[in-house]
Length: 222
Image (cartoon, rainbow, N blue to C red; front, side, top):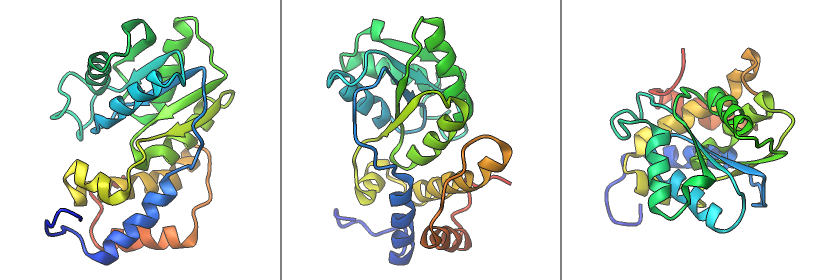
């Protein structure tokens, strides 16, 4: 880290995490879309970045989606989308530009319920900007392409480096464990019909296996 604090992780672990971090980013160029969907999580920065993108004129409609999970219940007790919505209001996003979806319990539901709430409001977007945590771009993209194939998908996240994000979130081991868990889902979920299949380079697979062996397993699914 750059602030002089001792690392919780080794340099080899950080390098493996960097490979996975880079892979999770889709590298999409920001462009105007018909609507944006901000996926709930434990990172309020998703709401902040969504508000900034709205103010930049990139979309007219913004859906905040997400109930609670074990990772967010203590941080956002009234639900991810509720807290994100309130934060965006405080940042100046008008209420009539936002839709609230407070029930989704996983990424597939985030996408499906956001699609449904937009349709109920009379919006049938042809392009959607997905705003996520930095390491969730690829899983959100793969899920949306499976669940909502008729829309053009653009992914966006706060453009932070891995080290900067670890510093902001404050718990290196937890963040890296969540990154590892997201990669497992990218690899495994296509077999269940939850997401489209994506190529995973060999060095990324090796980094994943290394971090699993080193115990970054708390967000893996059985």
